[in-house]
Length: 595
Image (cartoon, rainbow, N blue to C red; front, side, top):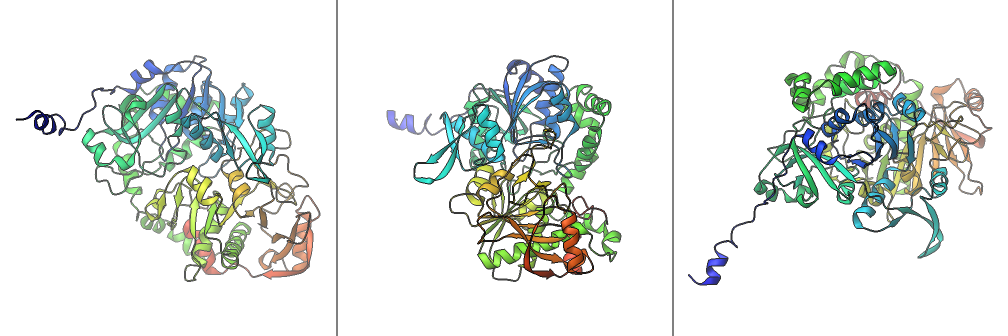
């Protein structure tokens, strides 16, 4: 045989196999690679690296490692790092609790009192900073933050600067620094022994922090597979082996968060463990209860295998069943008795219905092509609008900041990360694309819907700081959405604390807020008014006996004197069908309030 034939049909014809085997238990991976003072990036994909974080908690409890933390949110199972005093500085966009409804966490408040420093960004700018770090550039530009008090807070720390857009001097951009964590922690579906990591979308903050990490990645996975399997699913590989320090096989290593997959027979999806998440949130209220919870579920549990045994096989079987796209049917039937009751709409339901109608009206009249929603009531408004327009010629896609595009929401679960919605999407992506391109990019035709705990007559929204300066929850994706979508519709309960003379902190500037729907009426901005104030243009027939009575109550429930349009539109009460739509989406009334 000639030399070239010998080479071509011998060693060249055979695919190379990785030579390094990085498999090790999580405890060994943490002992080898985690050091005090590191800036840690637990990558928030649709999964979270919970098992790896538990091991860090076990090995560093009782010490003062002064870790830094960077991730899009500091919530849920990340809060245990705060309880044990392991984190001194956190770079995040949301610090609190997200399930079943978003709100402050006593764990965050206690950690702040003990010296925790919070560096507050937005969901998109966190990903932009990590992407810049992965690209090796010192800074990047953003359209978020500009004009907000968040920008002023960051500028005082030397972390933000406004500058004129060199291509459009009439527009301002923000300059933000790159972020390079020391170490990233990631949980994925599968990896080979060398660390080539197979992830399933949506990717939320994505793996930019893993690719930016100066020392590398600690990887946990549901299963270790062959490199041949990796090659067959190379389109799902997000982290190459060369970035990975260790590989730990940890089935259910994301629990209580689920793991979605579709079309890969080897991957059996499991859903979020809502019962566990509720118990975790309830324990946070009292310091002693939370300390006991952390000890029971982390410190006194030897390893991931013991954690799984403590949860029990039946629990995981139920989570696999809940991940079935059609499992909502049986869950909805379990609420049949309450859904059968013919109750009139409460004030919150009336607000959501009126908001849904307004979303539908604006889509038809202004040609919006996407609707990007925050959590809760704002999301339900968009979902209702999708049904109101189902038989119309309006073509638009629902979006969520985590990377869901074109979903058709399934009943029984209004949580933003409802795994039953994922198989209905037409596109699964990440925050950079969902917020930075499709929802808020330069060519967007996006209508945004958000909720607000506090807003003023100009539509400025606050979710960052209370009147006493105390931290609330932060921006999440709100500033990104409100700053960049074509137009924003806000839902807010009509009360003096919500409709403030001036917000205590401008999380999201109100320039693009064009409409506010409350529990009593509809406010819009007069296009011809230079000062851009919200004007009451419609009143809810369900909110009072007549127009005069409703307007009087709106005035009493506002912290400022609202402007009233010369002629007000009477907005008809919610219909039985509209009320039923809402209740099948939220049968446990997480966002609808008491019946």
